[in-house]
Amino acid sequence: MGSSSERPVVEPLGLAESDRETAREKELDRDAERELAHWRGRIDLQALLVALVLVPHSYPRNRFFGLFQWPGARDIRRRAALLRSVIADLVGDGEQVAVDDRGSFVVLRYSLREASLHRTTMLARDELALIKLAIERATAGGAPGALVRGREVVLAPLYALVDDQEVDQLLRTLERLFVGGRAG
Image (cartoon, rainbow, N blue to C red; front, side, top):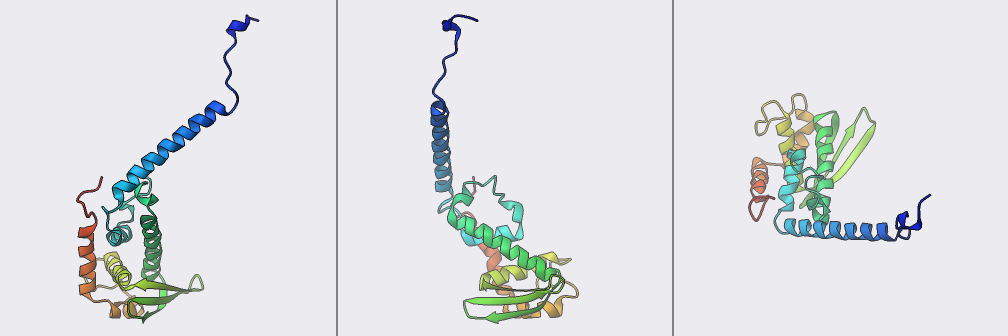
């Protein structure tokens, strides 16, 4: 073997690695806090909901990680996923659609025969308009007021409560997506 001067210096186990991990965690926390501060006050959450429902991949979570650290944006992301699932159900095989108008919100009920289930969800009026808009976009021409062929009777209760003005107002919401201008 060699002399004692050839031995590598060994740090106590865990100490140096632990310090490095703590420094990395602190750096990541600072980066996340800077990114979060960047998004706060710059993005309209209602407009983000519209964007995430109509174009789900417009704000990928990995690319906009800091945005979705913000609890408000995280809640909007979850709500958009719920609305997209309702839209898929209604465009698909949802039937026995009933809408109960309760003033500032509505209760939407429908059933899915193939899955043998009934679904009930509370929606804000603008969310109901968003569902109508998304269903129109899912049809062939996406013409305002269009219904998925063969679904007219099923979706009529939903359409009876939402007028084109509400849908137009929803589209104008997208103009507010970035209060301070461009993202990034």
